[in-house]
Each structure stands twice: as structure tokens, then as C-alpha cells.
Image (cartoon, rainbow, N blue to C red; front, side):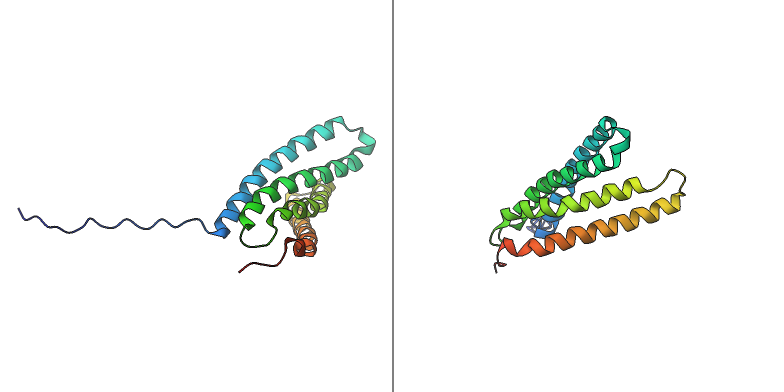
Length: 153
């Protein structure tokens, strides 16, 4: 039997999470928590609201949920922004302000379709609602991004 002194095969290097992967993981986690809370609160608000004011009440609740969920999401994301912008914790406020009208758009779209609509019409409305909510979210946060400070090299 011949013995060799060769080293065992090297293990592949484990890469540290990139900023992008941290951002995605933080967004997904905060979104899961925020949307779960939002869904529960919306269901409770709908059950408690008088029928004739249900839509208005739902939109007010949506704005509040957007503010809350945006803050939670922003807090998670702010940590990932450290070292990228001068004042990452300001992202909490930016996210909260941007999610407020976006959530109103989402709730308005979710309640707009009559029960008689086809599945295809519901999907089309959902896609349009999502695109509009994303545009609102992007526009508001885009206007407010300068408060984070200049990007650090």
C-alpha cells in the first residue's frame, strides 16, 4: 500500500452574503411579517366597519397599514444600506411614507372587482394594480431618496 502526502481536496470557499442578497432576504422577511399583520388588521377592520362606509374605512386602514408595514420593511432594509449611504436609518421614514399611498392603491384594486368578474379579469386587474402600486412606491421613494445622503465609496 502506497501512502501519499497529498492534501485533502479543498472545500469550496463560502462567500459572505452580498449586499443584494442581504437586501432581498431582509425585504422578504419584513414583507412576510408586514403583509401578515396587514391582512389580519384589514380583515378585522372590514368586519368592524359599517357596510355603507366599508370602502372609505378600508382605504384609511390601508393607509395606516402602509405606514406601519413600510416602517417595518424600512427598518429591515436600513441595516443593509449601511456603508452605502450616509444616513441609512432615514430609509425607515422614506419607506413608511412611500408605502402609505402604495398600500391604498393595492387595497383599492383588491376591492374593485365585482364577484361576477372572470378569473382572467381579476388577474388583469391585479397586474394593473400591482404595476400602479409599484409605480407610486417607486415615485415617492425616488423623490425622497436624497435625504439618505450622498452615496459613500
